[in-house]
Image (cartoon, rainbow, N blue to C red; front, top):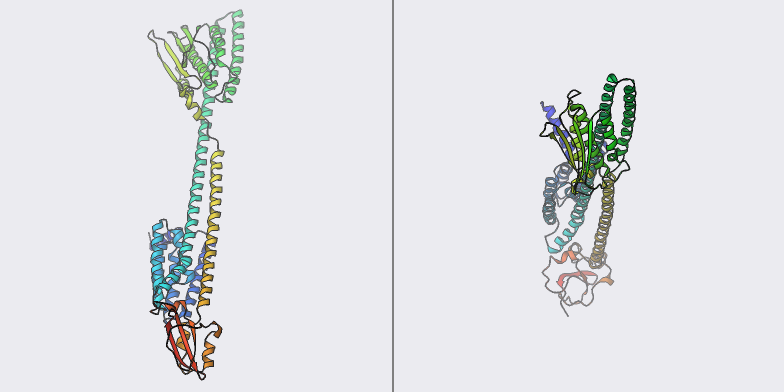
Amino acid sequence: MTVGSHTLLWVTRWRERAGLNGVWRWVYEIALVLLVTVAATIAAAVTDWYPSMPWLVAVTTPILMVLRLTSPLPAYVAAALVGLGTGGPSGLLLVVLSASLGYRLARWWQVAAGLVLAWVCFVGSIVWTDPLGVDLVVMYSALFVLMAALPAGVARLVRRRRVLLAALHHRNVQLHREQSEVARRAQTRERARIARDLHDSLGHKLTLISLYAGMLRTADDDGRSEAADLVRQTSSAAMTELRQILGILGQDDSQSTVRPLTGLDDLATQARASGAEVEIVREGESRPLAALTEHAAYRVIQEGLTNALRHAQGGAIVLSLRYEPDALVAGVTNTVGRRVVRATSGQGLLGLTERVRVAGGMLYHGSTPNGGFRLAATLPYPGDERAAPTAAHRPPPAAEPEADFAVLMERDRRRSRLVLAATALSVAGCLVLCVAGIWLMTALVIVDRDTYDAVRIGQSEAEVRDLLPDADVAVAEVVGGRDVPGAVCVDYHASILDRHDTDADLGQTLYRFCFRDGVLVDKQIFQEQPS
């Protein structure tokens, strides 16, 4: 293969792994990469901690966005390391990469490992602006949970839902394919049953017609008239047999109105009319039979009689029907006779074996000690365990898998609604906590360290008052700090973010500003002492 072919193959495989299979998917990914890159670059340019920082962010962000499609964990780790050197990743970039991490990784521990490493780098990026402290670690950790852990968790739930839907779809398709195969096999069996019935019934009648036709050549006028009547009767019986076949094929295994065994006497009478010596032997007490069992017994006797007329003409033929306690035994035994037809293919016995097997029984055929032939079948009664295979030939209903699939889909929809509701509540709770935190910090942040440092001793009171909050929010009657004779002092609470920079063991950190004669004469940082 050429270099171009290797490149094309690699691009094709990469596109399949990335899931870029449609035009709109390409448009979406390109727009997302541009949006995230622009947002991250603008944020880096505004911060401007060092000159190359915006360029570093502008180059690495699109690379990380593309890499996340096929290698989400390496892209996430690389983004965390880049963020450690640029004061933390962009908020939008962190959300997108976290969602890709939770959605595209198959193992949960990989997602957890990526989040832990990113959290360490995210918290470590504090050193670009402030000394590392417990308050900032807690605050940044909460922000990381909102911007990284929450998107990853939601994406993980979406992945699980889609995997479930894909598995259900695959199972449904497989069940439908199997049912189609079962239906096809059932149709094949039905065709085989029809062919066997036609072979057994029409073959027997045609054999008799052949024998009767032979009698026409050797008989006188009266004999010919009688033989012609036999041919006509046999033809009519063949049509009746064909109607019975169609009736049996339309039945289940339940009791049928067609009773083939009642026609054994007619079967023997027709054979005797051709000159054969036929005897019927019945033993045991007759009992109800399944249509499939009774039809199989009739076909065994019919096939045995047909074979005896073909291959042993002139010999004695015995049709036996024996009702035993646990099974019905139907058979035909004939002595040695003269063959009147050519050797057959044996398809009749093969089809008869299958028919008996479907009815849950067994077929025997073989020579007798006196040189004759015996064909017999043992068939179980209805309700016997050996008849169970007959039920297997009815294909399962096709509606059950569809109903099962619909139930699972509805259950998944309900769970998805619960997940979405819980996610919405979680987001709303995080927003409420953030707003409450901002309000609390605003209420307690009276003067921050930057304002304190900006005020210089010797400034006019008016200028300092402009930088400070209103006097009515100042703290009154505070114990602590040093006294300034002749000065008017006002005290303000320090911000929450500034308190970790002090060595306060007791009380709160406060800023004090003292004025005399319209000028700032002193400023202090001290801890409130208990009164």
